[in-house]
Length: 632
Image: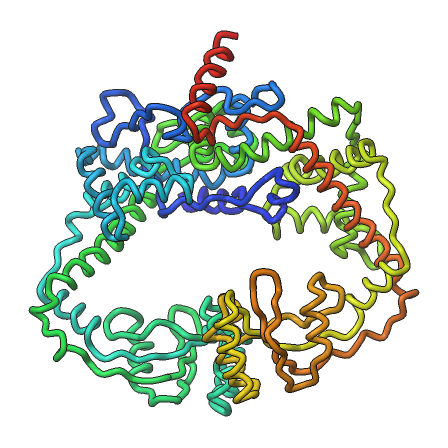
């Protein structure tokens, strides 16, 4: 099983930045939960271990209703099978893993006689909704509207597996009085507020701890520089450290530090850790006696144990399982040996059609937008008798690689290295890159030339602006960004009374609405000329080091700048870089024209998307069209 998991991770179809390009592919929806469980895939006599899919009255109430066609594009149908194939291409590897997981859970439930009735699923849904202060209807509407998760998908793919694993782990869920008391003292006992640095190796940890002990006040900056942990973006801040909940050595060191003190290097689980104690907080057991909070902490501990036990049970299931992954297998003989099969789980086959339906359930709405866009583009280039030939694709690949600086020592485009970058760094297979990125780009370029008789002019003024933006001086500044004028004025008054860099950073942490500004104490990339925000740039370049700007209105936000200084302009002339700037400007202007043509193409289109039907009239239209198509 471990080797198969490794292969899947190497080959997974992860969401790529390219997916957003011209709308042909869109950002992925992350379905909640490590293992997504069962829908009805087996015979009727096996259905007792899992809930039935709920029937929905019409497409408006369940966007995942099995409809065919799923859309009409200028009268041309997009079939369910076509959409499923596109969904597999984009997400097949990721979704297959979840399908395998739910097969494992289902098989285990069968072998143990575990039955999760529909009433238990509904009760858990109600309990979850209540925890978030919503009614069941409000909760389901939020899931459907914001996460595109239908009621049946939520019940069968999220709630059911959690209950099934909980039932399978029931022998691990007993709570002793000793455990309850230990958890009580962890939750209500003394705590330590601390910052952390997690270093990659001992050498960097020794270097970091020396700098931190010399200047403890720089711990946040050093955490951003040295730490490989997610807390680096928060300058090392972590939740309070409690006793008996984590690594014993880290807890021992943390509770032994004084406020402001930096620890030595702590080696734990193969990592090298440095702590800085911010403050100690005393025990709250007197204010909250054990008997008064017993029921509350028992519920919290129960929840933690359920999660841990379910993880343990599922881990054992995977270890004992016999899984053969056929889809995208490195061994090319497997797909030939098992045609139409995606994987085999303990002897049971998962078909490609089953995988397609699972992919469509999770990502159909999202991928359909891209499928419709591509169909529109195909129709338009056919109408204008435009051919996209192999040489066109080769030239676009070379242009893309060159624009990213992927060249050899002689300055020639290094296609082999570009393939590696696409497949490894961007996690997209080369053929999919050609199909979903390169082909649409070439087709739209040709369409723009044909439709608009494209004339792109790069002027001397354009070149001068681009040169100043890329090679001229930039303003090094910190910023406070808020979304209402009153708050901006309040922050500005405080900054004016104490116009120091340190205090301005603290104000940005307190007031800024942007999370990155808060975590970095207002640090922003150097401000360049001609970057697209002329009013902000004008004010920034007028500042002197140590000077505070006024409140600057930028779109829907209000910005305050603190100038730290200026960067030195690069020692090159416009003549040295003219060719590169020209190519870059030409490509950007071409993209603008392509976007206009694409927008015009979509505005003129007659598209009906049956997966996103929202009205009774549209639902009725869907039923009629679907019936007509099935008759044909």
